[in-house]
Amino acid sequence: MKKLLLPLLMAVVGAGVAYVFCQWTMKAEIEKQAGFEAALLRTQLEFISNNAGLRPIVDMEGRPDLQRYLSEINVLVNWYQKNPVKTLFEAYPDKADPEAVIKEHRQTAATEGPRQKAAQGNLPIREEAYKITREIYDDFKAGTYRAVASNYVGSVRLDAVKVINVDNKLQWRFMAWGGIGELVYSGWNLRWFKKPPQQEIDDYEKEVALAKKKNRPVEMQDPRTQHMAESTSASKAPVLPPFDGSDYIHDFPPGAEINYFVTPTCPPDAEELEMKFIVKARALAGEDQTMEFIFRMPVDPAWKGSWDGVKTIEAATNY
Image (tube, rainbow, N blue to C red):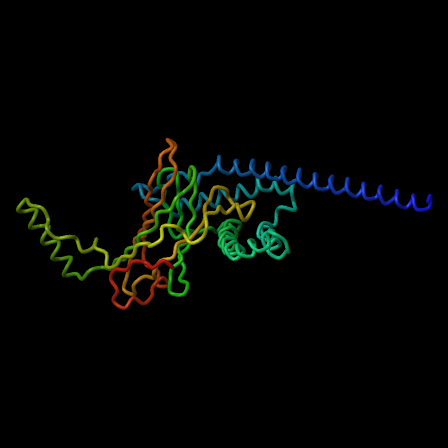
């Protein structure tokens, strides 16, 4: 009996030691994660408090100054990476991998258990969100972040980051900074323009001169201000569920909401376009603030597609 008692006692003691060690390890891991999250929040607050990119940067005529804005935001992110972020990752080097978050999602989707099915269903969306975020992140790290256009309304700056033609549809990737509370997207409106025939311009200018001479209103509309085609979103929401870049990459500049809309391609003869994003945000007074971000720009040839004479379309639900 005594011979059996000793091995049994050793097994019990071993199990107890293993349990205590496991509990200690779990506690240490929880404390480490909590410490990282607190340090990350402090790091992000440093960026937000110094975020010069949200100032209304305009040129001498009061128009958004894109090049100056891009220069300032690249400088700011460079400071963020070389100072607060560097300090953070010196303390938590295992968190520096920009793929850390998406790897966790991939691991959950690959591991059997109650969370696997939901993780597998969400993984394609998360992979797409990460891919878009990573492209912007890499540009920031290289100091080469560029946007097609940028505008500032109220407390929010919205960047049209990139416009790409995918399967004869345009992806308008955007990034919104500085919203107070939840940003609610109310869709987009897209118009295209081309230079009218010179005869129409001459006729209009003659009408203006005649109206001025006779002191009466101008009856004709300026043909240079008339759009040739127009499209409006059928769905108000962007393609992906709402997310911030820092949800996928720890050291992505905080407070930057990323997403994209899909629109028709531009008509083959379009020369300029006007894109309007309609957004609502919570104002300081606690009331909804409706903002319109309007971008007027030349049409890139890569954005054009086949329209076959269509003049006005309502974008289908898959737009």
